[in-house]
Length: 393
Image (cartoon, rainbow, N blue to C red; front, side, top):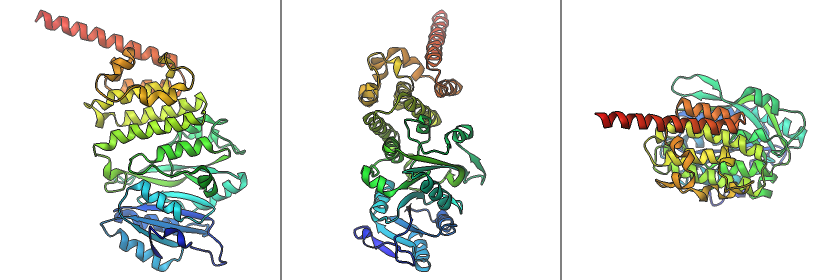
C-alpha cells in the first residue's frame, strides 16, 4: 500500500488474525535503485513472517518509487510512504511515526539482512525482556564484492552474556555505535521520546547515545546478521559525504552525543570506550580532512574525550558537558585550549595516530599522554635542526 507522510500513521499492515505486526522494519529510501530490490527481498525472505515493512521514499528521483510500488502490490506487509526529500533523519522519523510493531528495526536501503535476523533478535529480546538487542554485522565492499568482519569479535563474545545488562554494567558497549545494528522495543523509543536529529548528517550518533544511556535491559546476539554495504554512491548518507557540512555535522553530532551521555551521568569507562570509537573515526577521515583547520581541532577534541585528565581545568564528568563549548573549531583555538597538545594535533595522523588510538583503547592514558609529549619534543627538535640548517645555507 502507498501512503503520504501526512497520513502515515493511519493504517498498519495487520496479520491475518487482525493483530498488529510484531516488528516494524523501517527502510528510508533515496535513489538506491541499484540495491533496493536486494534489500527488500532480504526482508521479505525472513524466517519470521510477522512484520511490516515500512518504506519511506524520501523524494527519490530514480526508479526507486517504481520498485517500491511493485513490491507493495504483491505483499500486503509492504507499506510505502511518499514524502518530499528531507534527509535520512526525517525519513526515519516518518517511519517511526507510522510504526505499529512491538519492535523496530532500522535498515538502510542499500544494505541487506540474513533470513534469520528478525527471528534471532526477537527471540533474544523476548527471552531477556530487553529494550535493545544488539547484533553483529559484516562489511560488504561494493567495489570488490568481498565481505569482512568489522567489530572486535573477542569483545563481542565477552559482552554476549546470558543475563540482560546496561551500559553501567557493560561500558564497553559504548564502542559499538550505530542505530541500524539493533532491534528496539517501540514502547521504549516512545517512552524516551527518541527521534533522529533532522537536517544533519551522522544522525545515528545522538539517537544511539540517548538510547544506550537510557536502556536498563540490553541483550546481544553474537552473529553477523546484516551486510553493511560500503563504497556506495548516491545513498542518503554517502551522497552528502563530500559536502562542506560533512565535518561540521560530525562535530555537532558528536557534541550532542556527549551532552546526552553527560546528562545520563555515564561512567568514565563508558566514556573511554566511546572515545576509542571517535578516535578511530577521526583517524579514518584524516586523509580527507588534511589541510583544513578542522582536522587539528577534531584531533584535539578526540584527545579531550579519550584522556580528559590532560585538561586540568575540567574535573570529573563536568568536562563532558563543556567539551564542545571549550574549543570552537577556529584556527588558533588549539593553542588557547591546551598548548601542550597543539603540535601533536597538527601532525600527520598516520602510524603515530594508530599507536595513540591503540593506547587509548587499552586504557593506557598515561602512556598515551607521554607518547604525545614525546612526539611534540621530537617535532620541536626536528624544526630547530631544520631552521639551523636553513640558517647556515
